[in-house]
Length: 127
Image 1: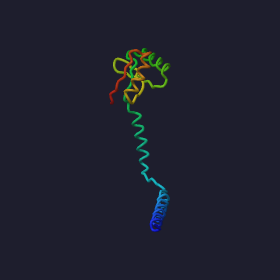
Image 2: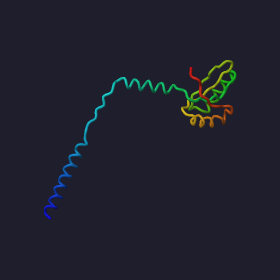
Image 3: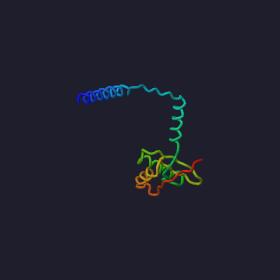
Image 4: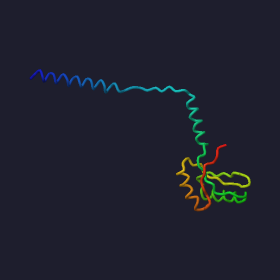
C-alpha cells in the first residue's frame, strides 16, 4: 500500500514540476524585422485604392447652366458626397459619390432620388 502512495506522490511531484516549467517557458520577446520599403508600398496601395472608382451616381445631364444649378442644389442637400462636373459632348453631367459596392450606391440612390428623380448609378469606364 505504501508503494502505491509513494508512486502517486512521485507522479504528483513530477506533474507539478513539469507544469511549473511549462508555465515559465511561455514568456518571450518578439522582434519583427521588416524592410522599410513595405511602409512605402502600403502607402501607395492606399492611394491607389482610394482613387479607384467603383460606382458613381449621375444626377444631371444637359446644358451648363442646368448642370451648375443641379450641382449647387446637390451640395446644399447632400454635403457628405463629392460631386464633379463632367463634359461629354454635347452635355454636361453631374456625377456624385465614389461607392465601393453596389449596395452603398443603392442606399445613396434612394436618398438622392427624393430630390433628383432621374438619378441613376453606373460604373464609369476607366481611361
